[in-house]
Amino acid sequence: MLDKSHGHVKPTSLLSSPVTFFKSSCSIIYIILFIIVLLILNGQPKSIFPPKAHIPWLTNVHHVQPLECIADTNQPGWPRPVLSNDKSDMNLTVVIVSARPEFKRLPVTMAALLSHLDSRRITEVMFLVPPQDVHLLQPYFSSEQVKSWPWRISVISDDILLKHIHTGSYRLQMMFKLFVAQIVKTEYYLILDSDCVAVWPIHVEQLLHQNKNSSLYRAINRGEGRSSHEKWWSESERLLQIKLESCVSYKKSDTDIPTIGVTPSILARTIALRTLCRLQKLYGDEHFLNKMANWALWREIFGYMWTEYTLYFLTGRCTKIFDTYHTDNSALSS
Image 1 (cartoon, helix red, strand yellow):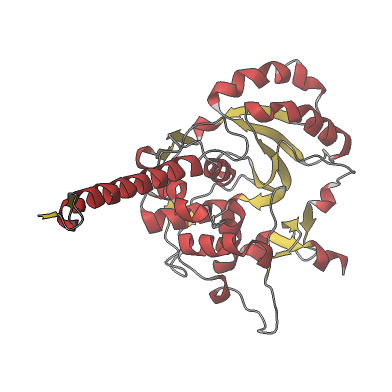
Image 2 (cartoon, rainbow, N blue to C red):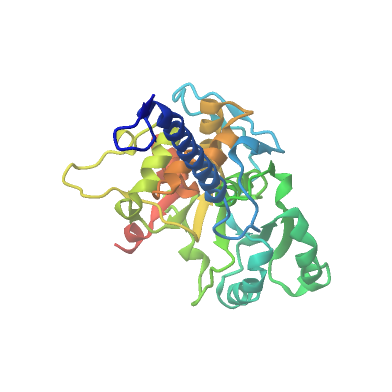
């Protein structure tokens, strides 16, 4: 059909339909490509790892050392990790999660630790680094070099904990901070990033507190409100499938529930591993790590993100063991 009313030929709407359809199809393709690019870029490292694309549909993360968990009859939804009884709770392991882009910061970090950290009950300082970066640190911590250090120093390849491909994301760094609990030789470990620098003396009594009524030690932490990072907490609750309010007793007049802070922080291996046991139960042994790596990537664009410390605190509170391993510094000073 042609329109000749004005002396020229003009295609009718029937002829223009294929053009409109073609434009709509192109728009849909562009939108899909844009989403794919966002998903890939969204998983790129924000901190220490070399730039590698995080490709969700190719991501494959699996643990090297089996995560052994047993059922807890009192809390069926929260399996307990199988733990050896030879871990000291009066000593501390320092864990520095790092990689080549951050090695330039380590001299200052180590000099500060030597100057300010009380070494009396530090069992080990452990560097957890990618396998391709191990050889860069080892010459500085050879058997001859470490004789002058007050603690044992080890450089550990992170692939003894997790094997991964197409996962160069910040999430991987957070996962390592929980999984390192499988290899530390003490109940408590202090997590540091390469840019954490001690600026005044730190005595062991400021890190671990002995209960007057028992011989047990507890890690000292500084409580923080959750309101400043509410999106982290809500996303971690979604991943663990719980609500903090259902696990913690608090007054309705309280505007904020005291929680845990961020790096640097002291963690208990028992709570860290129990966090992983919960996720393994929820999503399966072969899938829970990929679930963590790929969890709701699109929501991260808007600031929603699970973190290692929010998962850890939620687990500690919901299993009622957080206060067994932690005490707030405000309670000690009062």
